[in-house]
Image (cartoon, rainbow, N blue to C red; front, side, top):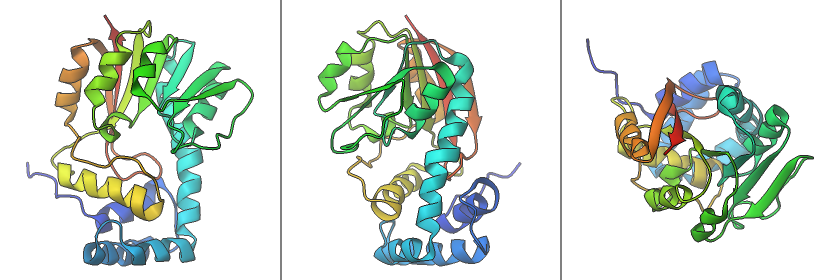
Length: 248
């Protein structure tokens, strides 16, 4: 069996636009145009940013991330949720708001510079988490870390602090390195999402692991009781692996 081809921006965009959303008119042409600009100018391409903005693709893409992606994540993890639930480094809170629909109440934590004006709904509590030491103060039964750890310069330090709490179940979703998506491609993709599609101060560095390495790391804190991979999620052209960990 031949190895899968190395992913490119163009091939990833075309598959995303055609099958997963955001759905755009003429996906082949849009993927080609964006791929050429990113190859020429880098993954933070100002020309690609301009094209995304003026074509309306950026608006549709962000809508997909906030709705279809968030809904897909919560549907994926819902059966493993044991309230009370906390969403750690919750971004724009789109997943957190969907969690409230699933379990009635949830709390969300995020850095002030990432979510300065949280959009709350009934049943959702929010608190800033600007100092990682405050993780030790979390009180919940289930913690969700959805594509969080690879954006942390010290993801192990975050997990070490979380392990000191009474949180007994971790739901971890990570973008994993595989034969088609190298560490380099993951970093370039993160840079695209945070410096081209949108402007975000999130850390983007070489902190990605394979599913095997993530499993090994998470197993040092407890038992990985469930693991499943999905190729893409709506709006994200990277593989995702779900790990459910029951902490020692």
